[in-house]
Length: 381
Image (tube, rainbow, N blue to C red):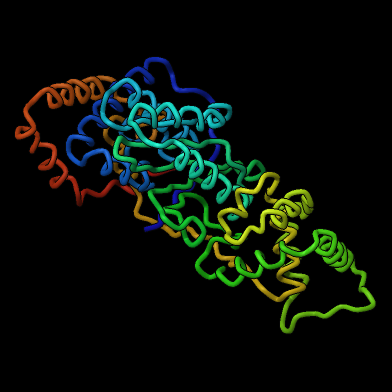
């Protein structure tokens, strides 16, 4: 399942009075979700961008803001650490994301799990969405959810500074990190993306692993020749692959940034005889620029191509959930404080009741399932 929502960059902060209400409501929804679906069921829902966005809308965040990821994930992380629900979260925005490994070790110790597989997974999903899949977004937010049974989910977000748009990546318990690994990707669909983890990139991955076993000096020489071609020069000997529009390919790469080789990373790959794409992505020093350079060499020298398809599709929209209490930016209406307080009070009463008495929530869900919001009230904030 894949879904999409446009997430423009928003400034400002959540008012203190609203943040207090958000924390209370977030805690209550998480308790009810775990009671209803278990910890794994909660993780499955967090990895669904529509469910996650609906959660964000219910607690009153802007329905289309980049902050819907950072604020909502932060609220969820805080609530999970304060409650003993059998699931915790590590990481966060900016500097907090770099604390993920140590926080995962703390969670793993709490749940008597081996932390290293999860630390490795955290590094790998970040490398995939920074290096292996390139669409002009730089990661700045990474939250890793882990439950007591070892189930995990990841929500991370990148920002395109030029377009001031965000893209959110959702992961859930994949066993293959290099072939269509995402549970979903939420963001603005682009004309193309350097997608080396598509199922259509198997030959690309295999050839790349063969090429990086060569002397990095040779690869660098081939790259310099391609750079010269990009400037309009032609070497004395140039074997152009059949039916390849080199100008179009070069413009694609240039639109994503520079292509410069980190020869030390390639030396590591050669010394370690790296023979699978996961281990290659985890190499120290392997960044987006180096992979772009290698991909360019593969395309124009070896006639082997990655996928250029952006792995995002259009979804149903959870905008109707903004009608629960309103939105921080007054869409579709300002936060209704009395309604918010009444909702918190109702859910607090519900949480305290016997599980058999909670069928009311299921009935409300059935009643509202087919309700449609007035389309004209859906406007950018």
